Image 1 (cartoon, helix red, strand yellow):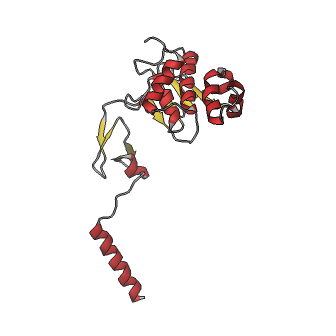
Image 2 (cartoon, rainbow, N blue to C red):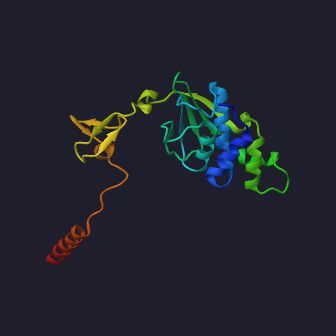
Image 3 (tube, one colour):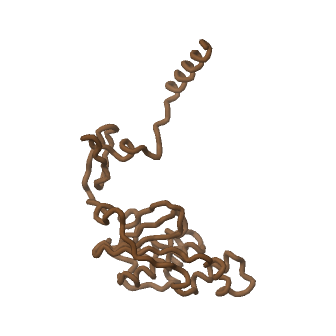
Length: 213
């Protein structure tokens, strides 16, 4: 795959995002720098690169444009720490490199922008022209969970013994001899909503108990 220019990648990111913003620029710049640091050709046409992003939002669209990593291809993960940061993992070698914007880059961007630009415009322009070393702190890291477990084995299936739902890609949990999904084993982000008749019966029982006292 032929490497694309910063302008081309920003155009692609802006099409999917419907406009271009400073954090998209940071995402694209991270992806371009990751390709150089890891020695990979990006955007990728295979699944060698795994990207773990530490926030949802605009920066992800820039990273997708620059790397070709997507959730659908199982090459993009979101660990939502609320940080504009990302770790790029070469799954063939296990090498992992984390990128985070340096402190003060919002103010530094003003130096690179024409006079009269708003703060937002200065960031949009400055992030495109600043040097990599001025934009990002780059750190070699080790994953707490081995990359093989993160990527897992596609196509493997299990059935939760509590809720009966299917669990894919080795995401089941083995607990006290039972096979469970994560939400049954550890608590999920949702809970079943009480049916109207159940809720009415509960309210009636509560009202009666209160009246007795």
